[in-house]
Length: 163
Image (cartoon, rainbow, N blue to C red):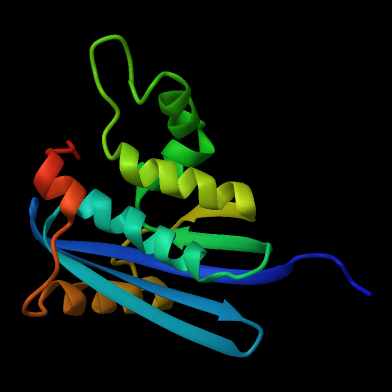
């Protein structure tokens, strides 16, 4: 029996009309010949939060440990994970340094937890540069951000979390 984790590709993008403004995320998961598309949005949020939500929603969809390659055009997301910034912020009580709070600690907490459950390799792709799946995720995210009656990004709206 092969116990190696299933290899899954996740493509993500976030969008925001105004920053802050109404926002959306788009996620595509690919495993062998299976494809799953996910999207959603919030009435008031930021682009960075939507970039993070796209990754979170994709990883939350996985029901068993997987080897994931996650593609995103968000340097914020890739650098915070691959350079260890998010782990340092968490270890420092969600402080970037002595004077500055880390932004989006609610989402970083979720993302770090999900990354600990899988083998995740974050890969940066240049946005709006013709990468087929990134462009598709962008369309999903923009479409989601334009829906009526979007729910509240409660942490952002009610607790004033900086982004």
